[in-house]
Image (cartoon, rainbow, N blue to C red; front, side):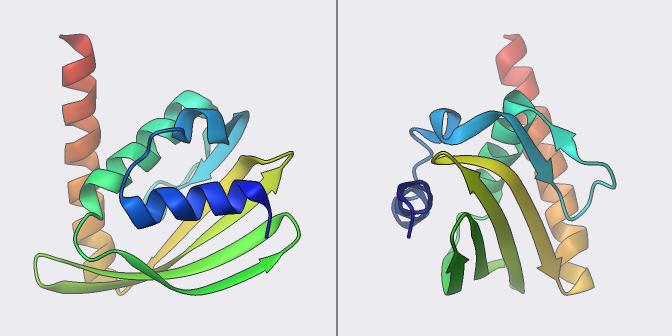
Length: 131
């Protein structure tokens, strides 16, 4: 497994996003399960992944990993407000940095809740940055 994937998994195990900015390629593309357009660039990818870290902080764990060279698929589970969430992170690395990050979530009830909580977390981050 590449060092980039090991760094990502280490962050997820500790719940810390220290070093996330450096792990993201400047041209990273983030695909959200609730936003229909790709989010392009390191700043927006960092914002989405940081917000996700705040939202998915209760019992998040990867249950399956499939890595083939620069491509990794990581199945995850967690529970938020009593709703069981199952999803996958599809990550592409290049030169030890994340160049593409795609998240898929199920069931529909979980997607709706994640959408609400992610939007609230992003708005809170924006208001803190403005202060």
